[in-house]
Image 1: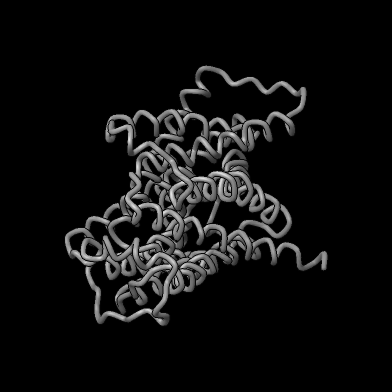
Image 2: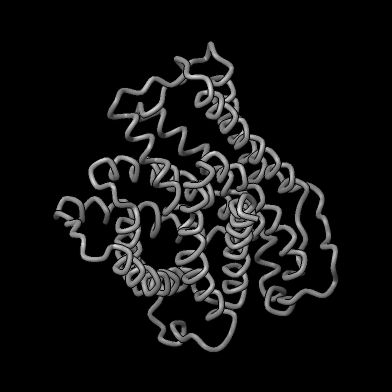
Length: 357
């Protein structure tokens, strides 16, 4: 049983992340403002993370300078506040399945920006380097198909869904071609933002190698930032009320299960099995979301969405295969100087805590 724990936890993590897409979509379909939702979920996450961080930190002093605080502010603004607001708009205009498919882009966009910032070098004379470049190209193709091609409509397998009434109210908007395009554009923004986020976090952790405190500060700052955005975008007091309904359940789910539990569980899995193992389980998120959508929402999916999602998963495995080949057989594909090696290690630590937020 002990040897199977990382596998069981990894599956739990991806199912939890799938639930994040589904619960968020249900809350938005019920009329909850996306910006208010982000504030509440970050507030719920802060309630969990702050005492947990203080307990684990103990009496050890790890001071944050003004420069550190400014850097964390910018990093949280890009990777949490901006990215999650964009993600909320995206799945509101498309579907939870498309939102889950976008998660498979994140390792690819992260690698792309790491190459641009010379944290990694690609040797096209080696199979590993070619695989990673091909992965980026397939990712672009998959994202393009998601946005530009719908194809035939595929009806859901089940006729009685939990949120049938709630979702049917926004079904017409969901099928609007213009809104679908806007939603896919915001998913692209989200994937790019998260890619930049991982790279910036890796650089920050070189000088401040305490990921849990770092993530806690990011959550707190994003809570403040998202409150400012929400109060500007929505001033109706009625929109801020949380009753005993799907809105409250979605907030608690994302704040407690995703931010408080799943992110820390992912930290343990990466420590036990490594970042490649965790990244390779990402497609389970998409599979769980597709299955969950069949039970929760009355709308089916489009053939273009399935093809695009398949290409995104393929691109993920191309990049992961190339990266794993480099780790097993050191070559000239990736030539890191000693400081950059430390950055690569920091990236692995960051993949844990930042995961999806």
